[in-house]
Length: 297
Ligand SMILES: NC(=O)c1ccc[n+]([C@@H]2O[C@H](COP(=O)([O-])OP(=O)(O)OC[C@H]3O[C@@H](n4cnc5c(N)ncnc54)[C@H](OP(=O)(O)O)[C@@H]3O)[C@@H](O)[C@H]2O)c1
Image (tube, helix red, strand yellow):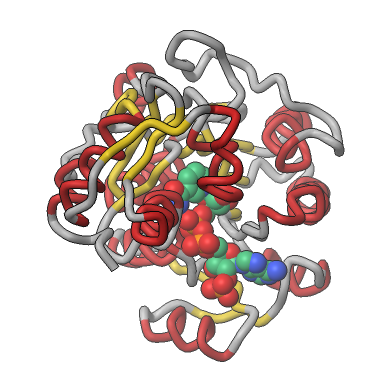
């Protein structure tokens, strides 16, 4: 398949690009800078220069593609409303372009805000809908295109997609711990995060691209829920720092922007994904990757 991958230069997207190319697919990667273009081209993918805010560039990238894997996202948590607006605009455009074609639109999402007090499953609908919802309500928007002849698939990634080179949530928690001199968790730290290794996630994206039916929800989850206290304890051990609880009222001051995520229970199961797509994660666990020293700098 010829696949237009947005976010091809990113943490997950670069692994997805490798995975797709290795499986014999053609990749056209969106790149907004010379550095991103160089990293996409070095893999052997074609480059579509552009930006999420330049819908014509998204249109050009999607032209002639059999599928779109949309992984680009503006990770500016100080202006999350704008990130959601851009996300919704991109997904609206992709839906329009693929309307009635039967072609695939795979959209990155996250196992957040789905359930309370239990692990979310693939059968749990996302309650976030509409332009003002987190991430612009894009998951439901995209899945709605399934009724219009688009093979729309939601890729719900774990709260942490970890591994060597990760610059996401766990890296930020490590930065905060080094800054504060303590690897902290919020309250009792019993809230849990689903986790998956980056290469397992990339393999699942390929499997979903190749075989998921319209309307499918896929959970890239290897570990259903790692207690945030255990994440902090592993980080503390790796950094040579003590571990301590932070009162929920003080979490925002202590952790900054990541407090709102680290206090959440983001558990999710992938039993249905494994059964439906024959996916079995094999990568190291989150604790293994922290112990390997990938989060000490
Ligand atoms: N990593 C995780 O733990 C995790 C967990 C759950 C969900 N997700 C979701 O999975 C998706 C991929 O995440 P990731 O970790 O790979 O993110 P990432 O490493 O931050 O990569 C984001 C990608 O989007 C591109 N991008 C950002 N703003 C753009 C813009 N204005 N125009 C064009 N491209 C733009 C970046 O390009 P540059 O290379 O030029 O910066 C990069 O290729 C996102 O939707 C994310 O929210 C990730």
